Length: 182
Image (cartoon, rainbow, N blue to C red; front, side, top):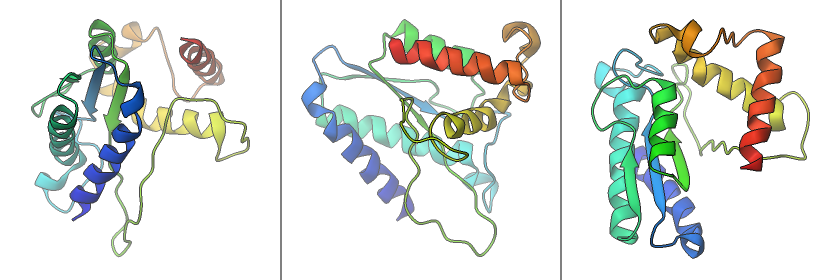
């Protein structure tokens, strides 16, 4: 039931883009985590985030292909493998992606029930404060990008990036601004 709701939500999101989708439109679907990076834990090893988002990502890709046969769908991974963050970006760049969808799930403490969805987009926001706008984007990015510590030679690859340093915060905001310009 939950997976059906997730797919329905994602399809509604993509359907809203239908007026902008051209024949040469490319969607890259990133099933978050994978391999040695399990993501959020589930009740069993089969329900860890990496397995759930892989299933959702494949189903989403199939639904997009069925609804929009001219759209090229590319996956960052189609099996349970670890794909480094920089490689996920390279896949999107190489395929000249018009849209990059990274699928993730959250974990809740025992006894809590999930209701609704969280959607993060790289965009500007007029809202400011501790849990909104750029600050919220930065905190989510830090949490999700902490996977770099699983990568071989991450210090060299990411030029000494430390997600907990003020310098990295400044650099991240600069990069986000440049991506927004693009």
